[in-house]
Length: 437
Image 1 (cartoon, rainbow, N blue to C red):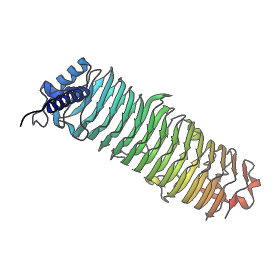
Image 2 (cartoon, rainbow, N blue to C red):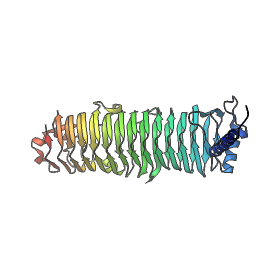
Image 3 (cartoon, helix red, strand yellow):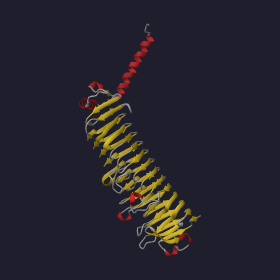
Image 4 (cartoon, helix red, strand yellow):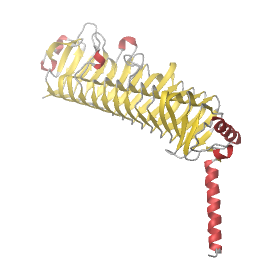
């Protein structure tokens, strides 16, 4: 069959397009002896390809297939790309699959890394600026899926599964962690930690985090889907969190934290926690369904103070002691110092809707315009000597079996329902205009 001029032109155009597509993908690792689906380990060939591509300022393209490799080092400027769910690097032996120390502009996209349960971390980057890790898969790390220390950059659109310790461990870094799916982590989903109390500024948003365990035990440092420790000015928003051994979102000594718009389901302890030496937490527009406690803003005795807890929906608190400990349970919201609690809806909190203060630990709390239904005690407020001021006004409280507003001595009711009188005995309290049915 004769070839027409049109066929020749079409063939030429296809060749040009293919060349352009290859150029966009970068240098093909195959030119350096890297072979997909080879039985042999390819550490040396892969390392050479990574080095040459970085030196040339080009991405390194890994074609679909499986590549067995030992630990690899990423020089500054390394960019590795593949076809998502089809390009897979598997660790042979132990160690860290991809590591870098210093430099900048390191990027991974469209590759899957499998540690076989032996990798200390699948990716371990330290002192790297402009990290970009997107649309990748990470599975079966013995330690962390990703460890990022003193780094800046973005981690987005990845799937991280079956990490023995944490899905993402960020230490002294400033990151945007967006739209990742993290499943079955041994001790934590995402950790944003600082070595000391300083501004961090990381953003954790639109992630899905499921089935976070607490294999290392402890009383709260493990088992949290998102844990912010000592890092100030962190935003945690619009995440979906299901099934964590302890907490969905835990701020520990994390000042100016913003926790907004998250959906939190089936937590073993407090769903959202701001605790210890912090100031100014904003917790608003979150949905919480099933936890031992919905929201806790606590540890006034260790510097914890200042919060807005506003417009959250909290349902189905569990009437049992979390982790067998002595803390409150079956409670919607608990606060202590310099806090506004307003516009929240709490339904089915069998012990208490809102707990205001604990023993002598109470200072300048306002509780207003909340809607409480099907609760044990509606609002319990401490009347222990030495407690500070609280105002409880304009709340709607329905079906409170133990009373709408009740004075508490630690975890024991000490008065009757103060909406029916008797509040004048406690000059530190303002109780008025609450609607009870």
